[in-house]
Image (cartoon, rainbow, N blue to C red):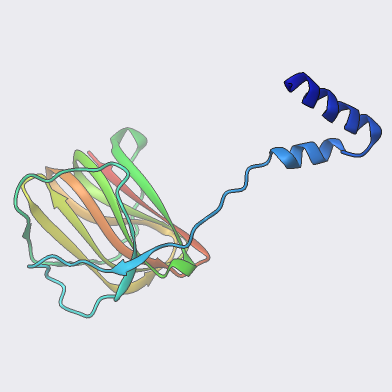
Length: 191
């Protein structure tokens, strides 16, 4: 049967009814992008940010699911001072992951399953983004909230949080929205 179909297509090409370009078009895949599902933003009891947060967000689950065994304890929020920082040398980076946000998604709740030990986190922004907050959950259950104060930031690499004593980071959660057509947020962990 395959020979017959192959021969039929070959005969159609010879007859000029199907051009070689048409065959390539028939093999193309069409990727259907479904609209993002919106849900209400979830803030656990004890979260230190008290301002009104976006009502609905698109939730992006972590690609690497990490379980935190200890009960969560929120530390006082740290107000972020956007300091552009050079990215550490490649050999000092122990982990990184990125998420692409589209402008039409509005607010996106991105979760990064880190599960690595390091001494500093960096946030890379490629595009323009409005940043609300980040939650860094450590192995012992402590959660450090970094308050971006809902400010817009341009492309660059920023120091997100230093912890010179070295800590095991379980997860990083970032609430942000793209102000460009697309914005890529990249989280890096340095050792």
